[in-house]
Length: 237
Image (cartoon, rainbow, N blue to C red):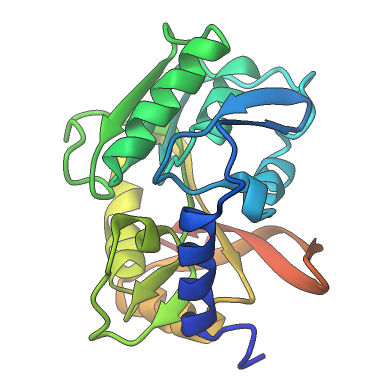
């Protein structure tokens, strides 16, 4: 478990993915083609974007029947946001702290003909979003690997891999429930590469309740890693 949660290995993976000589300009995922810009989290080097789609039930290109509004925090290439729009969400905001990711998400929205539904926004979590805007679904595939609280990022790309002291998770747990419309949901994608005990304690300190709504073990290279889709709420009801 310690090796699985080692933040230094996650940072190595970040650097390897960023500098890979075979890094493509496009890739195929779940039956669709996608654009990949330099400096953006690359699903070709990590299975976690596909795992997110599976946990959300968006991995089948025929997925349909989704309704309402959808906010994705940390959108990266925009695969999940665009898949949500293609499945029926009428209003989608794809937010990321990485400006290259914002451009990438907009590019993929254009590629798949959903620019009328998807708006890509540069934002550090919720900081630069319209404070009055509410969503039926708020989702974050978090940077669940815990790094020391005093770690300082060397690139914006590293922000997709580790969270020093779970500062970003604390902010998300605190703020996300205020961004949902009545009857809306907050969902967090986590994995055993993260520290679930620390997340749970942080949630309790924020007055939040966590409930696992879907889970599974998925291959990550030679390892089988447990991934969780967690609902965040203000009560234990």
